[in-house]
Amino acid sequence: MGVDETGISKMVTDKKPITAEVALALEGAFSIPAEQFLGVQKDYELANARRASKPNPAAQQRAQLVGALPIPEMIKRGWLDVPDMRDTARLEAELIKFFNAASLADIEVLPHAAKKSNVSEETTPPQLAWLHRVKQIAAEMLVAQFTDFGARRAVGLLRELTLSPESARKVPRILAEAGIRFVIVESLPGAKIDGVCFWLDEGKPVIGMSMRHDRIDNFWFVLRHEVEHVIQGHGKEKIVIDAELEGEKAGVGPDVADEERIANTAAAEFCVPKKTLDAFIARKAPYFAERDILGVAATLKVHPGLVAGQLQHKTGRYDRFRSHLVKMRSIVAPNAVVDGWGDVVPIGA
View: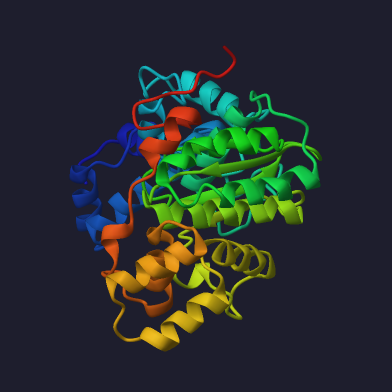
């Protein structure tokens, strides 16, 4: 090879790496492809580097969180105070604070979290982040003492508001007087969340809504759905998150969980009683005249949008009757605790 003994000794004792030139010389001496010698050298260096490196669980956990959660949106919404996402220490501290956890490993969006959440396994990280924001806000609200009687009485008071969209501004007050914390938090991208019911403790129920579908029928259906969860005591042992609460998930079929079936039935009856709706469809299908929709709404003393929404659900024709589906967020929001659409609820102020 034209190399002295000292040079060979350095290669054998790992004081000199095998370079491309040396590999070619070895190939000529032993008729073994130079690529094999270079491959051995590379594998050896990688093995040494792997033994020397120490795993960083915190870095791995941060990477998982950043990958799972909409961190930039949470920063933009003021949920996390992180001026520079490259400041990993600040990001870690803010995430721990936001999720009220002892460490990154305890944050429930991580699959290996030390403390498993009581939220359904189907819940996505963006939905969990939204839920935690609702919990943060609800924990600082003051409402009357909750009673079962007060909750059931609230249903009757809410029903009286369904005739006029403007009357919905009274919803937050009625729920607060019934001891129910009501929070509106704008949904996060991809969360597709409509509402949630849970309890801060035995006597402190919370209803959160996103109002991502700004329609009168959806507002009243989702609200009554969540109120029924409260009345039934749902959410005490397992937080009830309602995502995409339309279509099949708003029904009572065999694939719908018992708790959801109960809440869906109550919500549908609240908007338009099933017996009335079925009779109306049987008489008028497949043609539903404007005057007929207005007539049913007047008889039930509800806004026509509630009849239109239930007709859409029953017939599957979501392209029809849309003129009655008035927007509600601008009516309800001024009197409610709202986080989103440019507003941020101060926490711990």
